[in-house]
Amino acid sequence: MSKVGSVAARFKSIDYEISGRVQGVCFRMYTEDQARKLGVVGWVRNTRRGTVEGQVQGKEELVNSM
Image 1 (cartoon, rainbow, N blue to C red):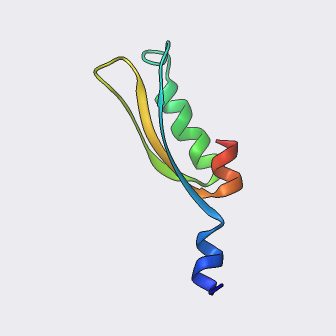
Image 2 (cartoon, rainbow, N blue to C red; image 1 turned 60 degrees about the horizontal axis):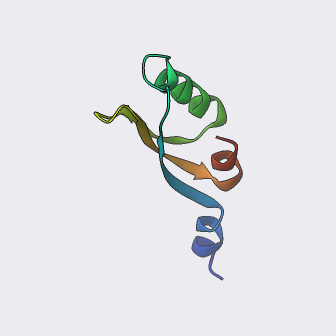
């Protein structure tokens, strides 16, 4: 396996959507704060359906922790 392949295998990207009581309770702010602490990147936003959706990318073990 090349260096590129072995490095890429250790990184992960996931898309998610959370339902329930997630709007109006600082869920996005908490998510952004946790992502910074863990060192992962991505985005998070409220939807018109009343859910929160986003994406997390980073080292596999850090994304799993998120």
